[in-house]
Length: 469
Image (cartoon, rainbow, N blue to C red; front, side, top):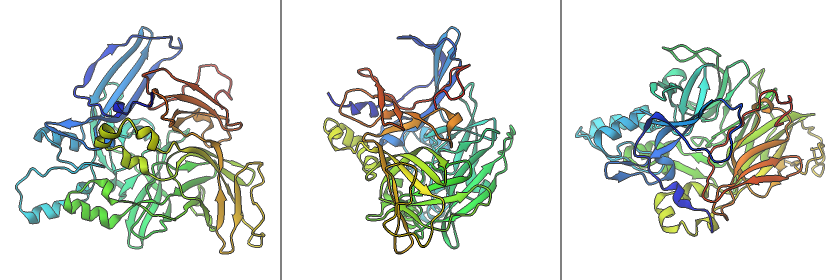
């Protein structure tokens, strides 16, 4: 029996504000204490209207609290502006990735046009991708748009909305910022200036005020290679000394985005896969903010999540979840799941885990036939006649394991294992796997009817320093 895609076609109609106790099958480690807060699309209907894409649903925050007396569960809808407007009108007013919003006001055409060109009308603030920490103590619901919402981790209440377009002048962001050991955070943002789109790296200090958002400082600015077509960058990498920004050929057409806003078309209509283009790797020095001058490119692939990257000798090793093309984004329309769910498992790319090795220095006189990679990896790098260093990945696993997690103590360092949810849709369950990136060995756990979504690594108290490495 193949994967049951109807699990994607569910609607969360009510919140569970009062924590309820759960029944435990198996056992929970006696030392496990604390809370796991998940974020994701949950409410799929407003009135008689329903969203058209799996990723469109209004954000619902879910909390599992592990206590001495057992786990409890609670949930609450994120009070975004989109959620409130849709609720007040009892229909979908704000457009999302795959759903066009419905106009409900009677303003003149000129007033409507002016509103559509207002920045906060270009993007929904339905922050349904992740929960992150900014400023050392604040918890925020986040998505690709520049609007984030501070939440209370105890009650899941939405405290306030922060507009990063007003705060630092950016247009969109990676929903997976990286938090440093001192509590500060790093993230990559898109911006469009007079010379075209840029990827801008900001650092947010380790401080948090109840009334204000921490003031960020810009570390670096990198030009996008296509004018008015920055790539979708869902995550980025960081090592001890460098930032790694893979620029894939799935892009956001800025002109089309504006046109779509005027015509009230969904966000996905402004995305473009530029065929026959390679992935370009931008490597930026953390100390100077300068990009390495030589050009690093690899075969085309679509990615959302970087597993880890680290420095070894004079190289950067990048491990990520890769797919041939972004077909999955277009397969997850609700209509397709309902009409083609029985066969969808045959059509979806299962992806791979790729290891790409980036040289940190390139001799201009190196012979074209000389492999620059000397780590013992199957990944290769050859300098072309035009100066481009062409990278060929090593395949760690023929199956992708998405939403990867690992011991955070080893992020940016050489490591051995990560954990993820299997992209193999041949079975009627969602497999959870531990992947050994050294040998490619995979250990899996599964149970019929159980579908894993997001995994989180928790180190056992008193475990050896290299546990989970």
